[in-house]
Image (cartoon, rainbow, N blue to C red; front, side, top):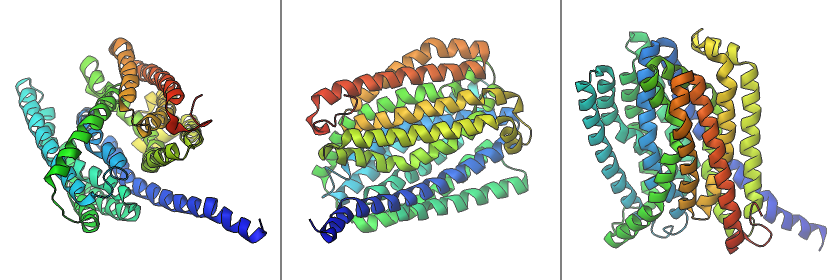
Length: 439
């Protein structure tokens, strides 16, 4: 082979694919940075300016939103990332219509459930939480709408358009925060109203971009197939999401119940500081799952899996060490002197995100193998561990106990994921000879 041919081969094999991945990765990080960064600014403003009780109310409402977001992501978003780029890639117009119908049905059911919860809370005397639940019932549809169609842009590799939508979202959200601060009306309820308006504006842009590209075909038979496939895959994915959500987020419900809303606010304040690295991983996640799917077909599965583990766990570890060393200073700076007494616990919170980063790569590995049932089983292990120790430790040691329980649960879930991949790697020829991951 001549030097010229060798250069051409290297260009086709490595340079162009790497350039494409890098370009998409940069836009993905920018998209997530803008979207999550604006939410982070809002969260910090609320933690600084609201009382610990009011911020505790916000934490409960936000955790409730995340819970339904996990269900929404499992039933709609995650299957879309798998099937939209694969099974239904030649029927995207009808597939898009089926997704929209599914979203409207889901948000309607969630809204009704939240209204019923608000009524119960009102009768039990928790009027502040009841008011927040009503606001969340009205806003969650728009918020979940933008979550869905941000990822729809990724299915068609339109990451640039997702970034534009996130920019619109950030402008509306931060404007709302500024108005709330200036008028003195910043509250948990106003935060979700602003998020709903921002989600509606950004989601409308992303829906228009994706719709213009996909068309408006209406195929009843296709919708039936989509419904069946999403229930098959999404049922396990949603169940796994809830099981994995539980040890990482249930403390926001348990602490107010066994301790106080103020303890929940402190846990949320500590978690906020570790969130940025998690958002970097979230930004790259839409590129990881399709990459693992392709690697499975091309017998490169273990190589891509190992690279993901190095990037995810390594970056979380470096970030966690830096944050823990400067914890007291950072907490004082970000929150204006509030929550400084909890600084010694920050290393536990950051360790949780290191474990979570590893579990995320292993989760995506099983999803790429179309084994969401194994993800669910592994998550159940972690959830059971948290149930055994979480309530007891949270009641006894508050924020410290809740953080220790989460670490134990994530470690158990990670061990179960590794065992599942070991067994799957020995039986799945799609992983490729010598590339079976964990074998």
